[in-house]
Image (cartoon, rainbow, N blue to C red; front, side, top):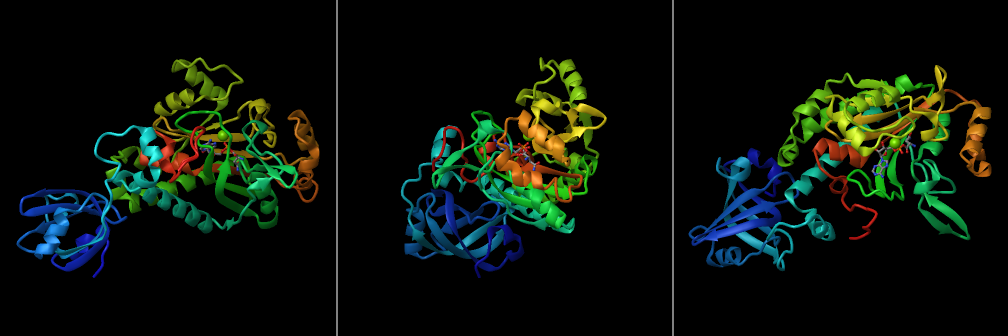
Length: 431
Ligand code: 4AD
Ligand code: MG
């Protein structure tokens, strides 16, 4: 019977076959110890003893190499000294392909070397665990929105305009015209919300970010949600429910992976209790100044500001009411303080910083026309977007959550580059 290593506890005393790869091996005279991996969590030690397996199988095991693909059959035993607590007492071994000398693992490697070998580095236990957590986050998000009555839909990647400012656009030639890779599906999603009510999209987005920080990718996955007849307060409540749902799911499904990543889960359990903090931009600034930041009013929160602010609290923080001029053209001014926007960035604790950006949108035609002018955006290209304010405009809000920032946070990673299979960074397009 072919079984997965993650399920091995169910087969103690039985004979099974593992199809996998040799993550590591050592031999001592008449015994060869193989650490097998098969894509499910953890590794399983297979013990190949000269007096149990055939002579040729023992020879095979002795001359095997790291990362060779193998099928090993034997009896599952509980063994507390083994990693994972179980062991396979092999009866036979078959090499599917004997690996050439594997470039990773002999010594400590720097990040650039590992990224150059990303196609192989992905096989390491930590990287597998990260991708398993990523998978759970994606499914949890989809489940959540389905339960909340949202319709999943899709927005284009090739677009004629910008959504989030013109400085971070990737341009491409489009049959004699210019097209841009989408920075966010939001504007299209607003049209879809007027058709379907509550909608979300989930796909790759692109930012020609010159920033070389641990939080920035040039290609990343974003889930945008857009809700007709919803104000900012309701949107924030939804975001909190969403994150609580996702974190609970990850804690439940990916305990072992979080252990492999040595992720302290106490801070996540705290977040899963809910009770997110809200503060205005001005309140955040006042607190930041006390914490030693030199941020000035009118500046966006820098990475360092987000880091120190979120270290000072154990719950995520919604920072609301940013000055209008440092936010996107589509954000609705707050009627109570018209110099600020009805917007909220959600900052994750433990120094992780912004994972969600959202706002209530301008629903008035005249104001939106004026804002386009102020932002020097080409009116013609936005005519269809203005139509949404001509034909049955309603109050509406939405937000975008960055998948990689979320994975980085929940996995407790230092850098966003490990949260996506093949990161695209300012200086990296390969492999
Ligand atoms: O705050 P942003 O720019 O918001 C928007 O694009 C809105 N149109 C979303 C909406 O309202 N539908 O981006 C949203 C999130 C950020 O909070 C962050 O998590 C992620 O996308 N993000 C990035 N992640 C990795 N690398 C980058 N360069 C990112 N830029 C934004
Ligand atoms: Mg933002």
